[in-house]
Figure 1 (cartoon, protein in one colour):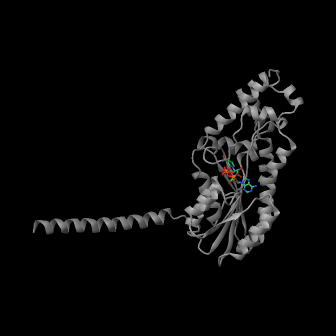
Figure 2 (cartoon, protein in one colour):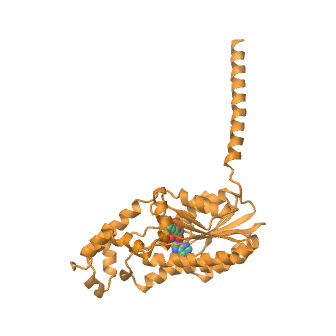
Figure 3 (cartoon, protein in one colour):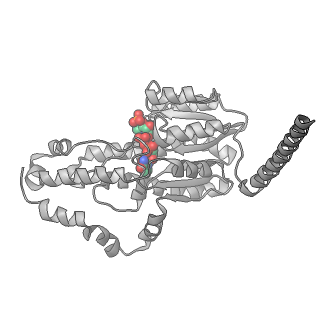
Amino acid sequence: TFYSSINRIIFLFCKYCSVGHLTFCSLKNLVCRQPGIMQDGYGYAVLITGCDSGFGHQLARCLDQRGFVVFAGCLCPEGAGARSLQSLSSKNLRILKLDVTSDEDVKQAKRVVQENLPEKGLWAVVNNAGISDWAEIEWSTIKDFHNMVDINLFGCIRTSIAFLPLVRATKGRMVFMSSIFSFFNCLNMGAYSVSKRGLEAFADCLRVEMASFDVKVSIIQPGNFGQATNIVRMKTAYDIWEKLDDERKQSFNQHYIKLANEYFLSTCKSGFKNADLVINAMLHAVTSAKPKSRYLLVSTMDMCFFKLFPFLPTAVTDAVFTLSSMYTKRKQIMHTHST
Ligand SMILES: NC(=O)c1ccc[n+]([C@@H]2O[C@H](COP(=O)([O-])OP(=O)(O)OC[C@H]3O[C@@H](n4cnc5c(N)ncnc54)[C@H](OP(=O)(O)O)[C@@H]3O)[C@@H](O)[C@H]2O)c1
C-alpha cells in the first residue's frame, strides 16, 4: 500500500542516515582523537588546590567527569564554593580542607589521600591555589609581600614536597599555575610578580630533577582572565590611600591613586570572559603523554608580543611601560600633592 511504501522509504532513509552518521562519527573520532591523550582517568587520583572557585573549581569538575578520583583542596570546605562543587560532582570527588599555608592541613590532606588512593595511585598534583593584588611597591607593606609569597609560592612548595613521592610512584604530573606576570614586569604587580617568578624558578628546577623519574612538570601562564574567576581583589582608591603611612601620604597624590584604581579595574574587565582556554591547557598538562613545559594563554593578537617579550633587551621592555600614556599621566600627577 501507499503507507507501507512510505514507511519503507522512511525506514531505509533512517537506516542509511544512521549508517552514514556512524561512519561520520567513527571517521571524526579517528581524525580528532588526539594521540597520547589519556581518554579517562579511571583508577587514578588527582589533587587540586584552591577549588573553592575559579580555575581549580572548574578543573575539578572536568576531571571528575573524566573518571579521576579528585581530591579537591578547598580553603573553606564548608563554604558555598566547596558545597556546590560537591553537589555537582560524582561521589569520586572528595573535598579536603587545605589551606596551603598550613603545615597541619597539608599533612592531614596527605593522610586522607594516602588512605583513599585508588588502585593506580596519585597521578597529578595541580598547584592552583593563589591570590592576587595590585599596588605600587611603595604602597605595600612587607606583610603584603609575605602574604602573597606565603600562598602563591611557599604554598605550592609545601604541597609539592609533601605529595611528590606519591606522584613519582606513578610517573605522573606536577602542574603549577603561574601567570604572565612571572616575566612581564608591570607597574603595580610587584608582589604578585615576585611570587610567580619564584614559583616558576621552583617548577623549572623541579622539572630538571624529576626528568629522570619520568615525572612531567608543566607551568600554566594565563593572561587576563579576571572576569572568568574570583581573582580580582576589589578595593577602592580610598582603601589604598588609608593604608599609606604619613610619609607616603606626603609624597603620593590621591588623585593619581584614584586614576590607577579605575585603570586597573577597567583592564581587568577587558580580559577573557570564560576560562576554557586555561582549563583545556590544565587538562592537557594532566592527561597528555607529552605535556608542554609552558602554556602561554593570551589572545591570538597578544601572543606574538608575549612570546617575544622575555627576549627583548631590558631598555625595550621597560620602555613598553615608560612610554605608555598611563605612565606619562603618572609622571605628571603622581608627585604633585593634592589631598
Ligand atoms: N584569573 C586570572 O586572570 C589569572 C591569571 C593568571 C594566573 N592566575 C592564577 O590562577 C590561580 C587560580 O586563580 P583563579 O583565577 O581561579 O582565582 P580564584 O577564583 O580566586 O581561585 C583561587 C582559589 O585559591 C583559593 N585560595 C586562596 N588562598 C588560599 C590558601 N591559602 N590555601 C588554599 N587555597 C587558597 C581561593 O579560595 P577563596 O575563594 O576561598 O579565597 C580560591 O578558591 C591562581 O594561582 C592565580 O594566581 C589567575
